[in-house]
Image 1 (cartoon, rainbow over the protein chains, first blue to last red):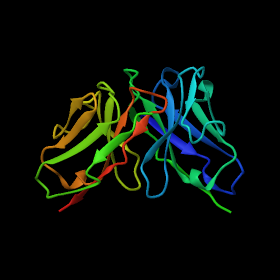
Image 2 (image 1 turned 135 degrees about the horizontal axis):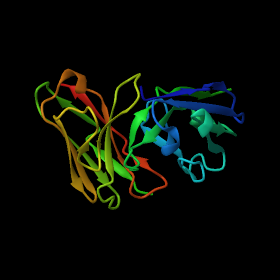
Image 3 (image 1 turned 45 degrees about the vertical axis):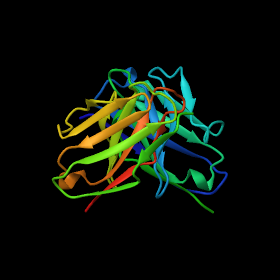
Image 4 (image 1 turned 120 degrees about the vertical axis):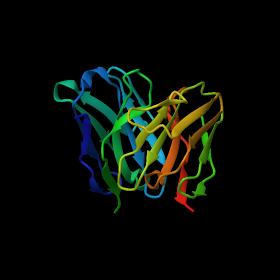
Length: 120
Length: 108
């Protein structure tokens, strides 16, 4: 069964850090780019970051650039999102997602999400 | 950045009727346009990619069309399970990958 499972969310104070994990199963993990996408309460979807299949290319959305770092460990089928200097506006459900076998950057498999709340 | 604008914000349609959702890009995205369905408490679901290719398992009542800057998602005969929020997404000009703000499809 092809799936992605996120973990690591929680409640954190502004300025603190949190690391999210996304564990994959059911497909050849090292063949695919992985993305993080978030949804703030009552808002739409926002793309956060991408890491290429072997981890040598990483890109970020402007709102998280310089604060968030995406990484992966292909031996453990896991992608991480290190979130530093968290702000209240980072409060959101965070999803990881993989792109298509064709290489197109549309997301055919999503995890169920992990909730991050940034509040004092 | 390529801004994606969806219309209408909310669409009220009766079961069995056709629904037409629109998405406009601030610049050409070629055919690199996807549509997602999102229900509360669930992960988004890919419906359409490459403007008009249905994802695996997506019913034939969902179809996508358009090119350049104007795109449409059509649901030919609405079923009860189709009422949800729909997002378009461009992946032509990135980073960043960008989504529209969503269209809420509700029961009339």
